[in-house]
Image 1 (cartoon, one colour):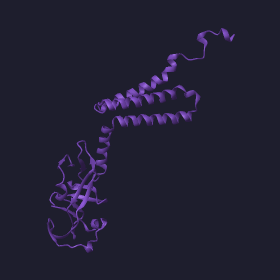
Image 2 (tube, one colour):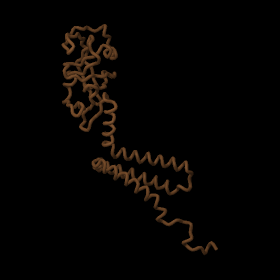
Image 3 (cartoon, one colour):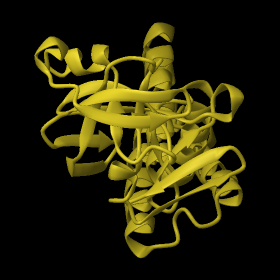
Length: 244
C-alpha cells in the first residue's frame, strides 16, 4: 500500500541533489572571477569594487541556480534563452569588475585600427598613434565641428586650410590674407581668425590663435599656439601622448 512505502522510495530528491544547481552555478562564477583576477590582479583591490562584485555574484547564483533547479519544468527553448541571458549577465559582471583593464585592451585595439582617433591613456593623457611616414594626425572638434589636424611642432600657430575654415563657417573669400608665414614650402599668406576652441578627446583648449592659409597645405596643422596650453607631450613607441 502507498501508506507503507518506505522513506527511501519517496520521489523527493535528496537535499544534496536539490542544492546541486546553486552549487554548480556558484563554482562556475567563482572560477570565472578567479581567472579574471589572475589576469588582472589589481582590478578588484578596493573594498567598494569587492562589495559590488559580491552583490552581483549573489544575484547571478540565485538566478542560475533557479534555472538549473527547474530545468525539467520548462521547455528547451526557454532554457536556451535563460542560459543566454545568464551568460550576458555574467559578462556584464566581468566587464564591470575589470572595466579598467579590459578598457585598456579595447583602447589599444582602437588606436591600432583608428590611428587618428584620440583615446585616454592610463595616465590620463590623450594618445594618438603614428600614421604613415611617422606623422601624427588627430581628430578634433573645433568650435564643435570635426576637424582633422596634422600635429606640427614646427608651426607657431594653428593653421587651417580654406576648406576647413569654410567647414567652421568662415568664408575664405571674405578673410584678409595679410600675414606672411614662412613654411617649408616657402612663404605663404594667411588670414587671422577669431580665437577658437579645440576639443581633443576630453581636453578642451580655449582662446586658441589660428590662421587660414591661402594654399599649399594638404591638411590643417595643430601648432604651438594649441600645444603650449598643454602640460606637456611626448612620443614613445610610436604613440604621441598629450598631457592636459
